[in-house]
Image 1 (spheres, rainbow, N blue to C red):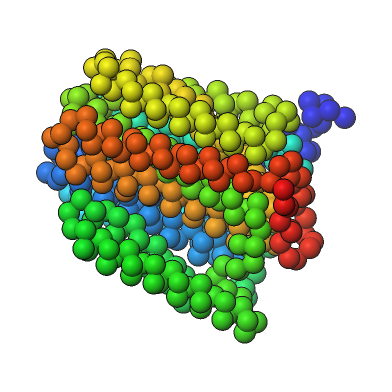
Image 2: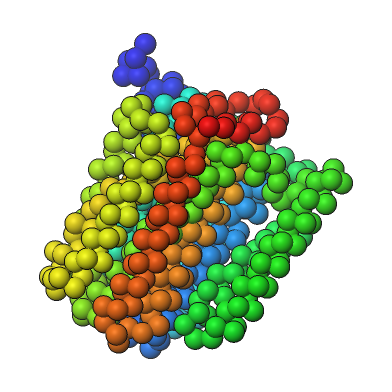
Length: 481
């Protein structure tokens, strides 16, 4: 019986799969949207709340950072509390934060609502999206299709954030953009009522509090230190070194906990899988490039070129169309080309797009000069987002999906944080110089794109992805070239 002929009550029917994926994909969309839509509101928020570009940058980076540092702990809580319960709790917390941000009288309340509450809410709801999807779709083709929808909407959310945010900000107010987020979250809650958790929650599952604190503090200090690069290099060095110390302590503590036979926050055996390690590296750089380009171009257009929110957002339509086109083709590409090939091609196209943004910024003052580069960046990122996720998630068995989903989302969101922190710090350091800091920030992003390309070329050739199942309990053995 074909999908079209199956009754809608059949869990394997096309309609049932769409109902299952709709709230999960929409959740990834709105969280990615939240990470980039504020970029076009910088001027409006700065004037309305009487703050600075640096203050708004800090709020954006803190939102991405809180997501990253809490993603692994929250992914472990999905086993203890249940995936569906964490998903719903995260949505509610996110909605409260969005409404608080909409009513914020100053930067402090905006940071509390957007950066803290929305950040924690996202960390709770995103791991279940990937865990539930991996458990629901147990073959490579259907999982590639599902991840294509989710990752595609995530990429579209990030790429379309400036456009949608610009439209709302210009037509109504920047505050209305947060109301829009709250409305979408309410819709997701309604759509997710039929989503069922395939595995029961285990309230007796231990939770490593010490490991959670060490990892969170370490990652926070590293990213916060990068933000100090344009004001105090000594403080930056101190914070980064302190962060590295906490991260090292986390790994030492985790190894000791494993040797003692106690369950750690994150099993170190996850890092023994070569394919997964390289896939995680490409994920990190992909999101770094997406958020780094989005922040750099948005700030440059508003502060140097004098564009308003809607004008800035319209320019990003090219990137949105690129991500949309390549994401829609994800299933066909997965059938015709190896995952490794798609990731390599994605980095090549993305690096070319950034190169065009550098080349054309001085050649023309017209907005259309940004379109070719942004289109290529959208096409490149959309091509490789899904293969990277699929490689990582499919490298482990069912009982490790909670851990690897949290690690995967942590690495991706760290990339987003690094992108905004690194590129933003370079750009904001001397906005008065015009094109100079913009070009420097873009050159740094090109170098990082080439680093991602190098990692992609080291992925095993022709690796066959294992199918997700309850056995074996150990991670799949790494595939070597």
